[in-house]
Image (cartoon, rainbow, N blue to C red; front, top):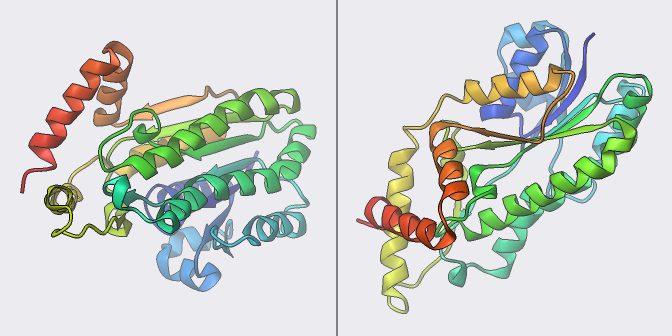
Length: 288
């Protein structure tokens, strides 16, 4: 049976590849991205558009009216029912927390936590309507290994993903009586173009030469790392499976680096893990 699926952040990476894969499998997908229909037709292949199952919504998740716009579209075009909500959109703020402005940190939390929370609440009536039809709806949130383990210079991003993890786990209990399932995807590094959209702290080298030097080396390392990482098709494939499987579990760590870090988190005492991370970042990220 074709599913009705809303995916945010569908302009690239996991969201775009999952949207294409899902329409080819016969599902109806609403791809939410800045620019809406016009931009969507520029970004997506003709084969996906030719299915007639791919629709676009101009959604700016940092704007307060975004959740209501999505809910209104679902009410008008899909009879108020939704089978899968994928909260995929997000971005990263990097650098020492000491040098990040309140506005930067608030925007990080707004995009990665408050926006998915607001959209989820707005879409719950449609997910519940789907459950009443016996269609096993689900909520899939794109988190990160950074939602399970903190790293230096990732503090604000870590905080936003830790919050998303906590929200998702709470919703497992709250939505179970309504027949709505919840899943978290926790990827490591994948070649999605994520590093190209990062925001960074601004550090005055004269006032804080230590953090300024470390941040410069950190940014260079991230640029080099952008050419490496896993194939995003693996995460898109996981998204497809979680959309279609009758029953799903909560957490899904994916990517060799993520699996390794999760194993370290589970097996090592915090003091050992912190020393290991400090050594790794000192050798690999903070050397110019």
